Amino acid sequence: MSRSILDLDRLSEVAQRCRPDFESADPFPHIAIDDFLPIEIAESVVAEFREGQSAWDHYHHYNQRKLAITHLDGMGPNNRRLVEALQSDEFVRIVEQITGLEGLFADPHLDGAGMHKTLPGGHLNMHTDFLSHPKHDDWSRRVNLLIYFNPGWQEEWMGNLEFWDKDVKNRAQSIAPIFNRGVFFQTSEISFHGHPHLLTCPEGTSRNSIALYYFQKSAEKLDLNPTTYRYTPSDSRVKRWLIGLDTFAVRLYSMLRRRGGLQDKMLDRILKYF
Image 1: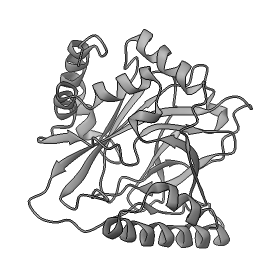
Image 2 (image 1 turned 30 degrees about the horizontal axis):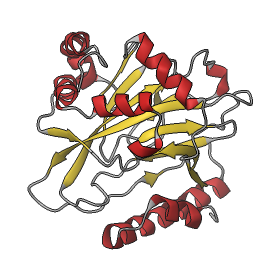
Image 3 (image 1 turned 180 degrees about the vertical axis):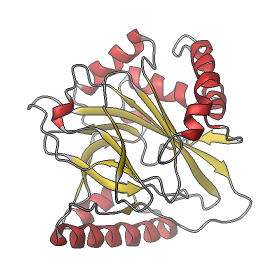
């Protein structure tokens, strides 16, 4: 992997400076880093989000509404090069510098990761992520990286990444998904995050990001711990019930997937009825 794709020297310097801020962040360890990529790399990625590849999968159910490309073959060449760089051993060492976690590795299959696009009216309810890999019961998910590709994004479009406290009673952080901002956060049973408000961006605009997940190998087999959605205090009684019903469906699907190798396209076909 060419070092010219990422400015690894700069990122290593940033990692050393920001680790204390990452570790002390409220409500769980996280850090936002602006100007994350070389500008020419970030701009080339934006162009491919706009091209509308036919490979987009639809994640449309009650708790989320977005598009995703979760395999390298479906991406344009610039996105593919970037994802491969973010999976490289050199970059993983930087993730370890930022987080203080050792023995990390990227998921080569991009399960749930890759290119994400949310159109007007889309959303992602508050949730914690799956903590063990759906297909590898000894892979413990530890770190998320989100990089945003949204030139000219306006906060009033309601797409901020929100972090809530462990009881999902109070919002602790609201991070705008502005162009070339990278956000690392530690994944755990209390790392509640999402962008739960329906996007109000203009037609022809979308909320674009690339997501990478980093794991540690566990000495023991791990419980499934699938994605868990939670309601917020302002949600209506009906919405709370629907969030719970959809979460149950996700949990059931995750169990079947670990045992039988079901794919995310099947999940979308099932959950679109919820």
